[in-house]
Length: 64
Image (cartoon, rainbow, N blue to C red; front, side, top):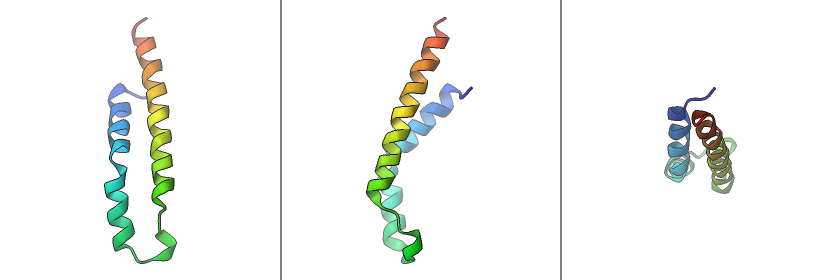
């Protein structure tokens, strides 16, 4: 089972993805490593949704 601490860390990391991507994309001139910001934001949105669902399940089980 994934711990509550891990889920919170994943959520925190997914809330601030844009700053890391912009620096990488601007400084990296290799076309094979170019990252679409929209794709990254979509993935982080999925992470937020899934971690929220897992947190809900964790809290339900914790309340038993």
